[in-house]
Length: 371
Image 1 (cartoon, one colour):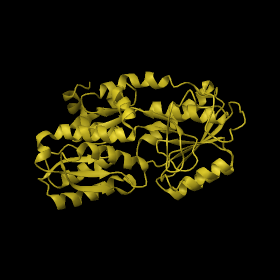
Image 2 (cartoon, one colour):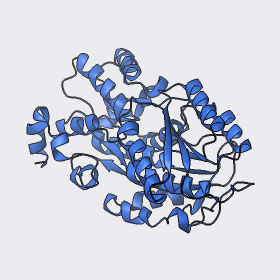
Image 3 (cartoon, rainbow, N blue to C red):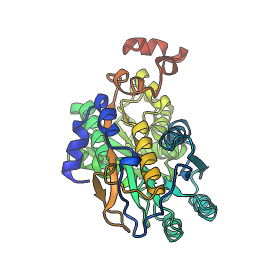
Image 4 (cartoon, rainbow, N blue to C red):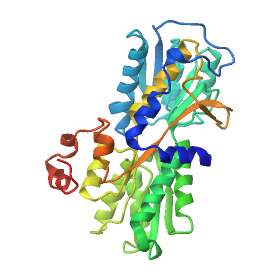
């Protein structure tokens, strides 16, 4: 991601993100897409295929799916519908799901790829069938028509910077563990790149892992190995690329008898992650506004389904390994700590105080001002 885009992402506060991106423009205002052969004009009765990658991370079933469904309904006067499938972290399954939707002639595909390379064949089949494809959250390969996600390299910068600040002088006295995401996920590479740019030369990386399938149990096993290799007294911080893995890491740290936990990062602002932040077990997460991302994806899909352009929605472009100048909207991100829970996930309606502050966390919530 270039410097200008990163600066723009950092500059936008959580309280202004919704206003900023709400102005992207409706699908009806859009006037063109990147397809060589634009779809014929269609009405509101669109059938949009939605392919999500897995259901271990809470966000997909709790936020992405219902939000995209809602926005498609709103943008099509209640006539549009979503045909949904979740691949449960299996790339072959996702390809089969995509092929089935292509055979059944959906009007558009929204694809959050399990494996960005593996999905390319299905994206090509969709293109050949005249079905536009919106790459959602991950930059899928193949002839995609548009892309929306977060500034993923900036996510890594936010995580790395927060970890350094929290470690302070201790960064010079020990080593950190880097628990990166799956190598099949292009976002994981960008998170890692951003984090390493912040951490390089400022702290020693004792162990670094590319965690298979992002699974918490794999992160847990990796962390057990890191503790054995480095020594539990020498670990001064843990870079975890997301909240699910942070949970597995923290379990391993506790099992090793580490009572004063080192700062552990995260991402996605999952409920369990927010609760660990409240309890002082996890230092931070990265809050990404799924409502904004879902709304943009719906606008792109409806516009493409109607054969309209994306000029008023996507103001920039990115290149994938297989496609150039893909119309793109990147949503800004925010560092989430116990200091700004009210101003982020609560204010945006992601969670209520009651959801966060269950009986187990009530006392901790009081300490950080959540009542």
